[in-house]
Image (cartoon, rainbow, N blue to C red; front, side):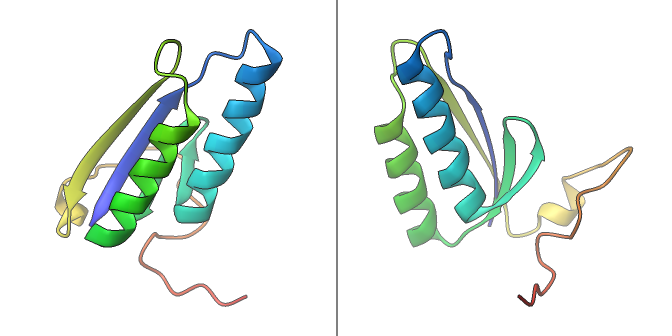
Length: 96
């Protein structure tokens, strides 16, 4: 399923900036950045559970926020894009 993840981490303190880096790194490991604090992640149910639990552990719920939009398996009909597109499609094969 495609999950759109957005986050807002308070960076007024050194601890907040550290949390921001950790949240961003965790998101990069699971998906593709499409805007500064927005990621598209193709995950199965088990991966989503681990991913979500880890992000919740990383943030400070008093000052930070996360949003998870589960677009499902037929996300192609639910996403409309205008302008510069990401470097690769989420479901393309990427060889390293």
